[in-house]
Image 1 (cartoon, rainbow, N blue to C red):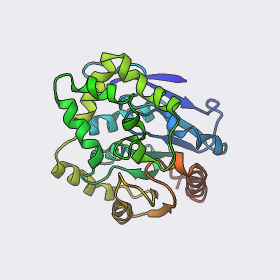
Image 2 (image 1 turned 60 degrees about the horizontal axis):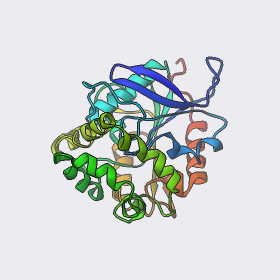
Image 3 (image 1 turned 90 degrees about the vertical axis):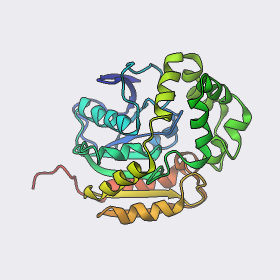
Length: 287
């Protein structure tokens, strides 16, 4: 695991690259709330032809707290994504967003110049921030001591495997040892819980979200929409709306999968990503 210091604080990341000599196409993988880079543990080993980078964003499973003044709103974390790409000097990046969709706001923030291709995989979109099943957690985090109660609930079977908890994200159970890794930081650290609360309460009103989503059409580079056909968190209708929103998009529906396609159908996800990146020319090539 490597680490980079950004204006908002430290970001840990997994990088399969071998330094400046590594000229493979770069894919940067995002993740969801209370998850980390291991969300992609089944997919990255299938993509040896790419330099795969999997950061842990400050969404509650990060191992070190961010700076006290860090902006952890939706567009604040999108800015952290852009700062991360800047700090590593990456260009022509394929940015993959799954579950958490706020990274797309680098477009409305005008910070997308390093992104050559965008992959939106069963993620939050339009006004679905957060998805309806997750909204009680936001209400809980607003209460004094509520974030501590929320993190305590992550140890229960209902939260981990119930249909209204993380069990609703997949069709196949996620191992408890993976959950243990994801949920440990917020359970052990008050500073991580502070960051988690800032993020969960950092979603703007519906009108603002919809205004930001209209600006997505400004992204004219290639976009891949990959959606779990059986998703119960992220409306399948949003996949088609997103495909219509971008000028250069393609849509792949993945059967027998919910939100975390990397858990349910890692081979199908890797195949769709490989075709998307490999069949298109570099977007940073000289004209």
